[in-house]
Length: 113
Image (cartoon, rainbow, N blue to C red; front, side):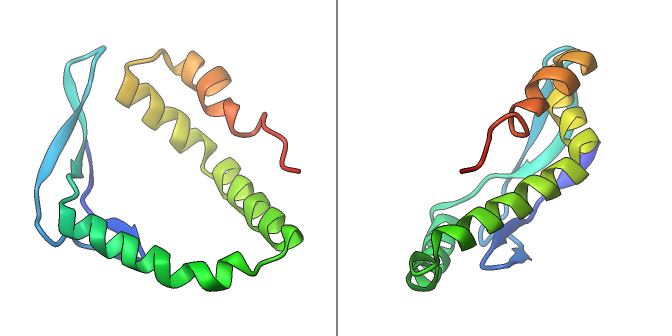
């Protein structure tokens, strides 16, 4: 079982302000696949504050810069493809072949223009 209790906010992994967790249950096995944090209103406020602070600079980025950023995201996704397919399979209870060949593949099938 994996444990993912932090949030990625303002460029850093941070602990929840009000720690509360829940198990993600694999519906195929009824076993816990991971433990995740439940965000509170305070966690949402912190994320929104960070997003608002980042907006002025990001809103002035060019189309080419935004495309380049999305391409880097896709490359990072591809580098973690097997991990993502495994997580999909565990979270949804999907057969590994389906998670690998179809569900995880939807991101790389979408062109960036």
